[in-house]
Image 1 (spheres, rainbow over the protein chains, first blue to last red):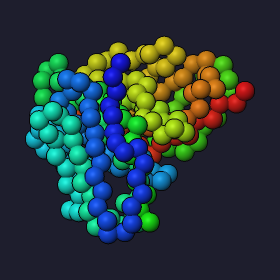
Image 2: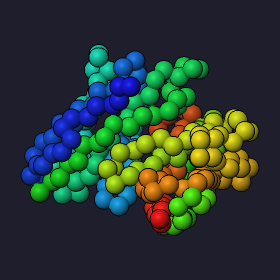
Image 3: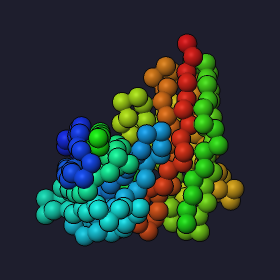
Length: 118
Length: 114
């Protein structure tokens, strides 16, 4: 079965540089979520999109922005990178819920992008 | 705000034995879902089991089952016939029925001894 695809899998950047992370959801999934997992920590919700519109926002720095495109893939743009941004970034997707709308179905996670800021 | 607490940072079980991982949560929402995810050393997040809050029956998936106590806001995971491949970090997660976002507990590292 097709899974969530994230690219790149590994990324090394210098401080103050910019990074773009890409996420390709499972076909026919209309909702995408982004999570950040620091070393030894649990994943923290960043932002989500439903049908190409932002649906919820968590503890995402103003330096970060994201969008979902017409083909449902999503990109997380990170600018002015800081050492503390080094983390594993997960994208997850979920299908249209049986009852419609958000929060009604399971999220399936991609393999993550490991970002290292030097 | 919703919170999820896993009070056992580490657990250990003998191969073929049974182990229970604990999780408690707090919420004022009436519509929500609860999950257990497994994260092996590869760091991939793998769904283990899912429970809808409106269902009284505890979910089961092969060797994995949950004890969902809604009034106590408790959601424990029982792993039967533990296998070496079960060794991993296990995260309990709360899913909002309104927004879908997941809130994770701190995780429990499970060690399986041969």
